Amino acid sequence: MAVLLEKTEQKLNTDLEQEKQRLYGYWKNSRMISNDSVLDAFLEVPRELFVERSFRDESYADHPLPIFCGQTISQPTTVILMLQLLDVLPGQRVLEIGTGSGYNAALLAKLAGTVVTVERHEKLAEMARENLKLAGLENVVVIAGDGKKGCARLAPYDRIIVTAAAYQVPPQLKDQLAVGGFLVAPVGATHGCEMLKLCKTSPEHFQTSSHGLFSFVPLV
Ligand code: SAH
Image (cartoon, rainbow, N blue to C red; front, side, top):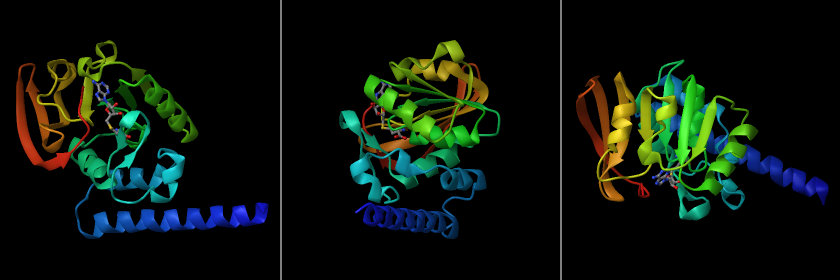
């Protein structure tokens, strides 16, 4: 019985690795993702550590998956596109709103110096802390609280990413972004929200560009 279980486990791991490579190849060959650091981070982080156990065999399926508290871990292609837009440089301080499983925070941890991530559900924040620990990532601070307020205590941030949809970018997040920094957020309704990138050009000025329509759980 133990041998059989071990073989099933090995087969699952081989299948997951193949599916991971397939996604990677799709992004690279289609030139959808040209940022090699983002692609490397994807290869380095085991997404299977961040999905619910019963969905483990779907870890590299290109669609969102349910996590606890009625939330979702976003579709891999969406996560990677947002990270490419965010354009994180080594050593930077990044704020994420909507920790969820902690997967996006894990990718950010590979790209940045320090990651601060805020989640409103205490249970998800705790699970994300455990997942990040299992992945061996120590440069992430997970905070349970209202992400609309950001985290002024650790501001300013070079990059801010919001992974839930709101009708406007919360003003406190704009305040906590460093001049010269980028903020990426889905803005609008849950289905059909617009992916915006804001570049802070002065303490009061932002340049905004739009990058397609997506679906996200709401920022509440
Ligand atoms: N980035 C996550 C997925 C995000 S799902 C991952 O990699 O798994 C969006 C998350 O935003 C959910 O977990 C939801 O609970 C959280 N959220 C929604 N409104 C929030 C708020 N006001 N403050 C903090 N987190 C919030």
